[in-house]
Structure formats: structure tokens, C-alpha cells
Image (cartoon, rainbow, N blue to C red):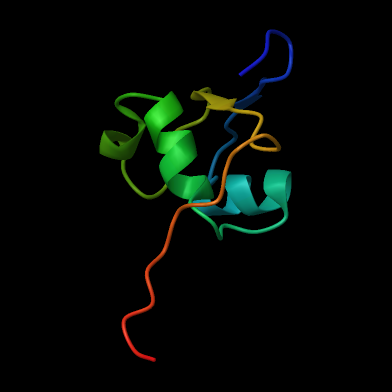
Length: 74
């Protein structure tokens, strides 16, 4: 991550993490939820519906490499 490329979001009443991620990145695919949770230790323990005022780091994922996958069936 480069300095200044990450953004912070402060939750409002009724916000859910998957909705915040989808609104910011366009969807929740490709490990985006895992990346946001990794950047915000303890965030997963706050529950499904976030309280107002939770500061969430939304890392710059544009440089992220896609995860390696293996084909199980030919």
C-alpha cells in the first residue's frame, strides 16, 4: 500500500460491512472482504450491523494480485 492511497470510512447507523465494501469497490468479490478485515483488526468482532462512528480502513486494492487457484477437474 502506498501512502495516501488508502481511504477511511466512518460508519453510520445501520451500515453493514459488505454494503460498505460493495459501495466502495463495486462488489465484494475477489477477496475484498478479507482484505478489509485484514486491514482492520477487530472489525469482524463488531457484529453484522456496525455501530455509528466505526472507522474502517479501505485499502487500495488496485495493485493486489489475484489469488492463485488450482483447477480440480479437467
